[in-house]
Image 1 (cartoon, rainbow, N blue to C red):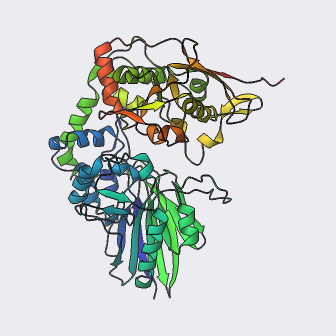
Image 2: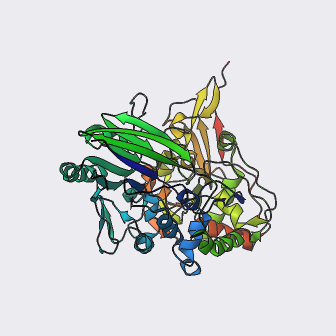
Image 3: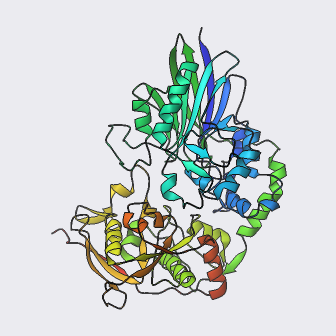
Amino acid sequence: MKRTLKIYYTSDTHGHIFPVDYLAGVPETCGILNLAAQMKKDENTLILDGGDTLQGTPFSQYYLEHPDKAPCHPMAAAFNAAGYDYITLGNHDFNFGYKALRDYLQALDAQCLCANVQDLRGELGILPEVVHTLENGLRIGISGIVTDYVNVWEQPETLAGLRITDAFTAASHAYERLRPQCDICICIYHGGFERDLQDGRILSYTGENIGWKLCEELGYDLVLTGHQHAAIEGTDINKTYAVQCPGGAERYVFLEVEEEDKKVDIGSRILPVEKEHEREPYDTLLPFECMVEQWLNQPVGWMANDILPEEKLKAALGGSRMAALFNQVQLAVTGAELSCTSLGNTPVGLYSPVTMKGIYRAYPFDNTLVVLEADETVLRASLERCAAYFTLKDGKPAISEVFLEPKLGHFNYDFYAGISYVFDIGRPVGQRVTKLTRTDGTPLGKGKLRLCTSNYRATGIGGYELLGRCPVLWKGTVQVPELIARYIRSNSPVKLPNRESCQVIWQPQT
């Protein structure tokens, strides 16, 4: 007898609850509240999510900083209205510590599944896997897994009360427990693919993403992936069907799974979120959403000259005024000698009067600041990583594919203040830094240097391994967007330095 399971799958919704583009300040067809109106649920339907729910919009950030101002937990309320059955956690769900995670999961109706997260305090109610029996008798085994790169990105104090174990090992053990008990076996994996899905070539060796390995080496019928925000409507890898949902709650994956005589057939589509939403919890949350909008539109100060959007390659070649502002703030806050910062993937400007909305558009990260004890060896290695951003095509500079695939990585190119340096991009990668001095032209010397960077970069992520090994001299607790706002408020109109510290050269083609 043929039996059918329908699945609505989302992932990487990143705080998009209302149908609003907060940074553009306009309505947008997106958000869990709108998505909830499209989910037609019955006893043979499951609604699943792959994590990264708490972080990503000014709305979610404002709630996490001011939970007492909201009538309820907005992310949990939206998920409850949609009728989610099971979720797993994403790496960004750990950004805010144990309490924020506990408050979310305790307010959530859905069961959290995460086989490689150990709750040392026992307050989160996380399960490694579950067998869900549908009305038609189908037994659905479901496990959840989060990329174990959480251990790389997060500081130990943020993970206090938690232990993140090896993702593949946990997925394997969960599969072994589930397979004898179920007809269909599903893994919700907050991670992406380490190989090209077309030709199988390896794209990354880091272990951050192991989606291909999960499909190839285990026996799950279905692997629901995320993290990379790619639109993967459906692919078969060694008899395992896999999908990936784009981020931002703009689209979702709808799957139809048929089982007959132990044979499983799966089809799927990626569908857009539509314009309609139910009245609740929209009406309940609307006053809080209006409060967020008021906060975002508050003027905080002025720039002496507006910062216009900067094309990525041009900024990397000739310097970025936006990065100069961020480094200026970081040096002022920390008193460090040197500073490095990065920009988001999308070019944006910053205009007067500067608002919190403008700042969040310009600096789209929830980072704090760290001061490291570095030396010339560390700086040279880090700058060589930056220099790898470039390649030459037909004798002209271009952005290396390494920073474009499998996921845009412009944020892994760093801009420095406090030093002057030259890249010769005609030379091999790893041998491109041809000059490195202080900004006044004097040698760096053999002593230690105080380098300010983000807590993200201080982990060594993005190819900056030596930074991750540097002693930490100071850690901040205030997020960078708020630090930028405070600086602009106290120093308006803000003037930026004219001198660029980076020079990129190459031998023109003749």
